Image (cartoon, rainbow, N blue to C red; front, side, top):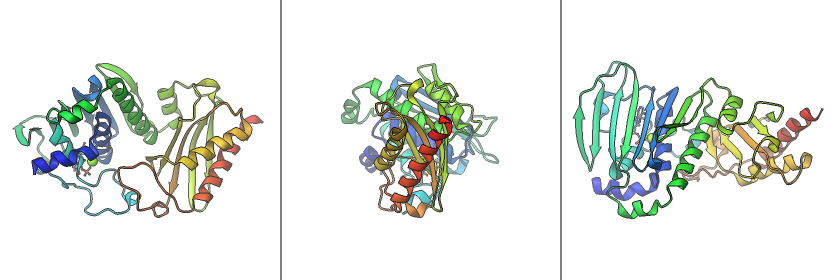
Length: 322
Ligand code: ADP
Ligand code: MG
């Protein structure tokens, strides 16, 4: 089974940033409200995540690294209908196949435990925890997969990707406090008070001001909420459009374009806005054929959504022109 795990690992955990994403998603699935991420050497040396979520049952400790061992659901064909972020039971199995994993956890009414999983073997330790939650540390990434190790060439790029993923998490979950630490230095920390505007401010250093405009619109099928920031106060390029659907980060070219186009009908064409929009919709409007790990999505009733988005952005801009 271990060899099989090693082969399949490439899909879910191709680089440090994808591991960070999977681990933090597990913390979110466990309903954590505080998630701290400590990175050493762009994740190649260590990725450590500390959460205050519901913890793992003592009885489950040896199942964690089994492929398809998930406590969440059995079958899933419609990604966005699934309330939890993980459901395939693949992440820990894949990570355990390419790194050393130390995991400590405590769940209410269960025994706290600590396990070290490396090279397909378990080691156990007894520990004492006063609080609920999970600490997971991933070390010596890709120690046994030299080809993968070679592929991670630029550590600065990796660090950038980790920041990117953590920022998106913080934007999509304003009521969770995220902290990101690189080699002992704090990179950012959000408060988890639910205020998206504050998160934007913390992440991008944008002063909460008249340049941050609230966007809001609703149609029978869609609800759009979020902020658009005028570039006077910031760097300006077309890549700062952050979209999420039902709080899951997505990429959608036409939707990004409709935001930029709406913006350009009222603002200088050479400037691009920052946008942070969450769209709420019935999961059935999202194409089911989209692969779970992909962030690209297809939507039915796309035209309706594009029109609504354009209108919402224009309205937000016009209100402040008065
Ligand atoms: P999946 O998330 O798809 O279920 P994973 O391999 O990511 O699969 O995780 C396996 C299982 O380990 C999860 O289903 C969950 O029960 C447990 N788990 C992992 N991380 C945490 C955590 N931080 N808090 C609570 N449970 C966790
Ligand atoms: Mg998971």
